[in-house]
Length: 166
Image (tube, rainbow, N blue to C red; front, side, top):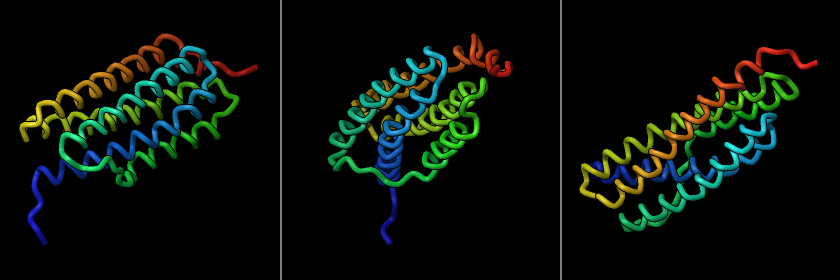
């Protein structure tokens, strides 16, 4: 078997996050529909638009490395999304649903932040300045989304989750 290199690992991880982003695009509308708080619904809708841009940037990175944009099944994101779907089912109609949705969304964000941070560092190491810039732009947006979700949870959603629905 041929020796694997950082280039190979970069490409493999790029396929992983590409698959993940495309799965997230499918999950976000479901999360937006399930959200009770208008601010949370709007946050999910905004992030769906951003995620479309993330997919576009990833396609540009594939072009930079001369590879076809192709995903590789990411069991981690499938599990995180499945947990989110369980929360939607188990907490439907309760005051705690939005807090659960934020929790699920942040699990997705944290996964993405780790992937984009790693890919950016590898792109820099491999001398791919343009790829590193594209990956960093997405990394910043993912971090901002995570902070916005934390703020929304602390300002209203977590308190609302404590109350029983009449």
